Image (cartoon, rainbow, N blue to C red; front, side):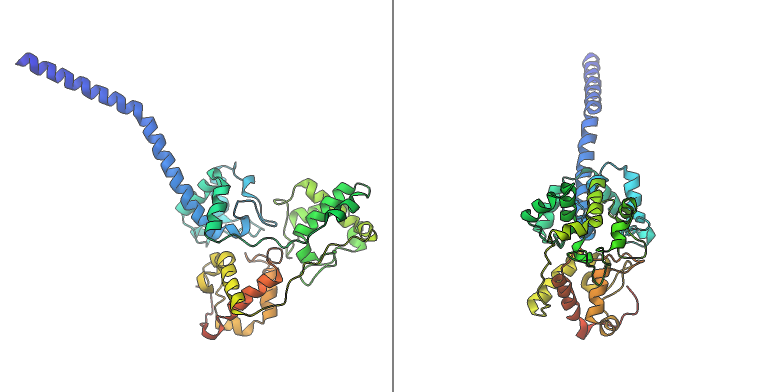
Length: 351
C-alpha cells in the first residue's frame, strides 16, 4: 500500500511539474494574444474617437486636409510625444488641446486609444468605417485646370514647375486668394509687382509658416519643399502665365437656397464638421461657445456668420473653412443654424 501511495505521489508531482513547465512555455503566447486583443480593442475605440473628433481636419484616411498634416507623417513618432501633442495641442497652430486637464474633452484612456490608432491602424479601414457612418468630410474646393492649359504653361521656361504650381494653387489656394490671384474678401491679392519682386526664400517662408494674426495658415506639414517652390515660381511669374491667356476657371456655386433640403444638408455638415467643438445641436462645449443661442442668432447677420465660418476666428481654435467648404455648403450651415432661431435659448456662455 505504501509503495502504491509513493508512486501515486511521485506521478502527481511529475504531473504538476509537467503542467507548470507547459504553463511556462505557453505563457508568452498567452500574453502575446492578450496584448494583441487589447491592442485591437484600443485601436477600435480610437477609430470611433477619431471619427467623432479628428476626421474633419485630418481626413477619413488620415491623409490631411488643406494645411492640416497627414497622420502618416507622425505614425513613427514615439507614443509619449503623440500623447502630449493630442493632450496639449500645438502652439501657434489650430491643433487644439484635447486633454481634459488642458481644457479639452478627452480622458487619458481615450488619448491612449488615439495614439494606438495612429501607430497601428490601416487607414483604409478608417475610411471604410467613415463611409459607412456617412461622416466623410467635405472635399476641398478646387478649380479644375484642363490638360490643355497645363501643356500650354509647360511650354514656358521651366514650365513643368509652373504647371505644377498652377495645379497646386487651383487645389489649395483659389478659394481664398481668388481664381487668378486677384484676392477676395478674406485674403489679399497675390497678382502684384510687390509679390513678384519679393525674394523667393521669403515667399517660401510665408507659405511654410503662415502669417500670424491672419487667416494664412502654415503649409509646411501639407506641402513638400518642391511643391512650395513650384508655388513660389507661379507667384513670381504669374504675369508670364497671364500673358499667355491662361486663367484658372472660376468655381461656380449656386445662390443660397433656404429649402428644407438645404437645411437638412446643413444639419449633416454641422454634425460632421462642428459638433466636436460646438456640441450636438450647437449648444456649446468647454472647447467652443454655443451657437444655438438666441443672443448670437439675433445679433449676428448671415453675412457675419458666413465670414466667421469662412475666415475662422484668429486667436482661437476656430479654423477658416473657406478652403474646405463651398459657399453653398456654408450657406447650408447658416440655413441649419437659422432653423434653431425661433426656439433658441438665451445662453451667455458655452456649457
